[in-house]
Length: 567
Image 1 (cartoon, rainbow, N blue to C red):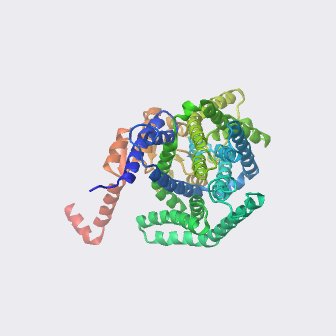
Image 2: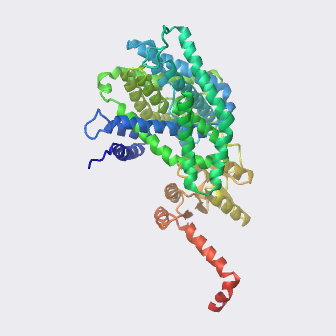
Image 3: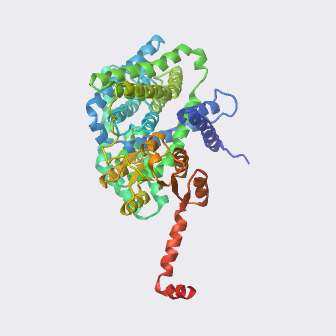
């Protein structure tokens, strides 16, 4: 009996190859996105060997787009945008216009119609959220002024692209694309364009109104009711049902894109107190489908473009990394910000990613972008994502030299907290439920404590309680160095992530061989892993809980006599 296993094939092979090449890219200090895209090239129709089903890949990538946009909505902060609105909004809009014009000019030299140049330029104007956030996180810049400007700039770019994704299908016919077509008797003049645009904007307005009036109440309320059941499976399922359900209904009833529906679902879900849990619970599935999205994009890439059109590829790459970045640099400087801020933002934006792929795919589908344009966009994305870490390395070296010649006060990531200059202190890594209780108990016993946590709210809470705190990953060298482990007596890893804890343990041991290192674990395998990476001891939470419960049981009246007799 024959079984059609195309779906299993693409998921199994796609994820396996993406894992291998993503791991290789990480070892080479490149973004894993490069590995995922190359994995798609490997299983695509333009390379020998296994060829995945392109139609299925496209549907999986649509799911990936919906979940990516849901994640963007969950982390969208209007407050963050408003904080830097005077530069982020006009700056991003001006940079989009400049980058679009540069892309249009390149398309004009290739003899493409103006609408093809417009879509091509738009695709080159928006940076990758994943690449930008990762680069800023590694350098602990997210909560600095320049980091907030970069993120606000990115939010504006994302919103413009969401609007473009909604409007392009509606305008494709009058712009010379395949669908939808103008009404009979319409000659595609300005009146037709305005009418199509008006109908589309009315649909969007109706959708937004329904989401703000009904969705704002229903979505958080339903999530809280499910959370009250205490079932983790139902909670995770409800989060995914909200994300995909709102996207589906919005497309069915209002004709807006799946992406916009998922974005609004995430944005409204953010208003719930359970938004952080929703984000965490949906993260594994979002990550898996995001990987499949990048794999499916890689499948569309024809490597022959590098041989057949090398100069066009180079021009596209330079438009992204030089033209767009130069525009951003000049805009930031024009607003009176220092050169270091302008360079950080321009370097952050010197790449393209998710939205560029989505826009390119939509352009080809609507016949308003040639397949060569999509290949140039994919080639430009691959090269710019590969180049971005090297550009940041150059920027780091330049800023280090500038700091030597003209010392500047470091820009604080958070409002100044208690001094980090401690001696004989305990470093508590993780200030969640376990870490915060541990830090308080140590302080009550007169032990000076310093906290490391990658959650902004946790560090702010530590500061409010008079505890020095550093925001960042415990596995980052800069973060550990700032905690002065060479002057500490002990470090306790209260985080539940054994891989990150193991990496931090090994680095702490190398920085101070005399440091006592303790960690928490949730299984015997985790205990073994932590001990192998330098821990002097690891507490198995469940076992300690069992011991405590046994002690409580044995101290109750029915068993107290039995305990006395045994003594």
